[in-house]
Length: 139
Image (cartoon, rainbow, N blue to C red; front, side, top):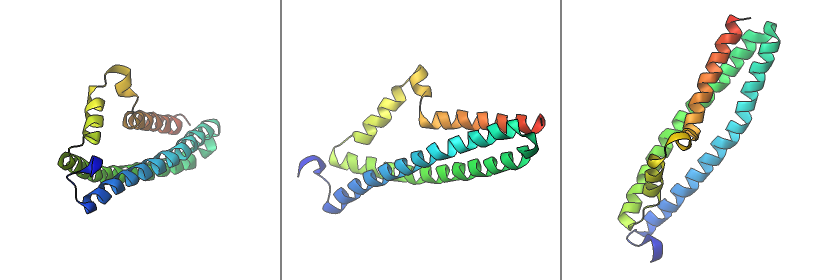
């Protein structure tokens, strides 16, 4: 049976679909983020230069950020369920792909630990929040 021995045909298909869903979700999430982040930064930069538009630009960028933040939480919830199922199927099949990735991630230290999508999202969110406050207070 090859690399997925120990799994039923349905479980093999499910395992394959989990991988496809994960790749799709990551592609969409990262794609939209590459559009959203520059829009947020441009709106804040414009609000900094044109203080008369500060409130609507900050409000609009805050709504966009909040929407994308909530989408990210929902996506992560789905991903957690899928990855747990993938790990369960891997254990049954004697594979360790997701377990090995998780283990390798846990060993990262220093700068490599900081250069992760979730950490960058958190730092970016804090920076955006501070910028929104500064624009509104200093206008």
